[in-house]
Image (cartoon, rainbow, N blue to C red):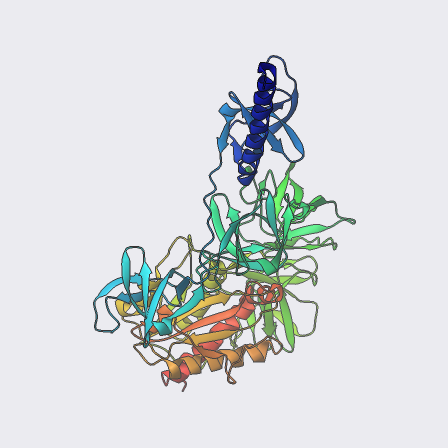
Length: 610
């Protein structure tokens, strides 16, 4: 072979080797996709890897994730959506792919109760090495008889199997970028871990849009429900959508006809510069009983109004007032002489304003009388409906009369008997930083306090002494402190007041005692429950009583009833997640009905119903 031929052969061989080597690296380049996150507030993407001889194609916002296609010097070629270009590597950070699928065979346990003891060995006499709270999880290791061995952090020990649930730990995958979960349920639980028995963190409402972080193989989705806060929701109660859905935005509309909002909140309502409780105050409060015209309405319940030449937003919830196309106008004056409104027959509604379109606060029946506070120009009288609330009753019927002589009849039918010498603890559940359940414009903690105060007033009206675990929203006791409060104050009984939450259709009253408690409370709880049930059915025959085995009283291991030193009961008066329940339980009339049932039950149990 001559020299020229050898040169040609060598060149061909080198070319073939180069081609083969190029094909060899292609799979490696395609095997891993590198993601980059933008660290600048706005990053320009150019048509070439230089700032001097290129033009800007588009810009990307901070924290946006793009795909790396290539690198040249201090520049990355990136892909964002369907666009590609060059961006400075100085403002791009490699995103670490840290999520790894978990073994489908790994099991976890979740505690069904608070202060569950973790013991060194599988016996009740063994040393306690730790505790678990309700909804907390740990790794399942083994089971022996009625005991489960678990691992939690640095602790390995045993827990009683009766107080835990065992679940298979799901595998996890990272969610695609910019995917959101649009809530379709009226109220959806957010939990600390992807299990139904995990700790409840909060509730989210219908149409809320939540950024998705991870997806679990058991049907749960990790979402961001508040800035910096993540939790898990069930995927079947929402839709996964690319980009944030339009349903997350608040829609503003102008009423089709003139509509007024009448404020019934005694402290008035603060005007703000936007439709949120977190919006800036405008320094103007609209007083109690004021009428304002609704200029605009937001889909989240806030309304735009004008008062004292100031325009702004107020919370238009039915909890703080009511809307009506009726223009209620009246003047009122204080009677020149002390006068009384006496019911001679039938029943009349007590309303928040002197009009039949105003919401009902309660009822006045035959034999009731009230001192008149004001008389309106349309012949209604304002009375002190209860110790905390005023209301209006129509004087335009033959069912009543007005007199300057104080009647001898009582305002309400007196309860027979006395609780003098007995001390009762009334526990208003949750409080302060712990709102409890949230739904339909109300916080459970607020409903609990109002209902507990009604129970307190009713007990005191028959001579009983009441110790409240809290008297305002500025106080809070832990479950431990509530559990031992009765012993601390030397009480004879303990009543915890709560309101429930669940699916939108869930409704009604129920109560709980604990059969395994230190003190047997069944007889006490049954009597209290039965009397509350009777009182509710008498006044509200259509209200749901959530019965199991023909009783609304159920056995459940709750800390405040399980470790209490006295007879105890926990009441669930209604569901904040149910619109109709909230309308009823958020009235003084309903609270006083429940309070009457409580007092009747106490009189019967302690033998004072004579």
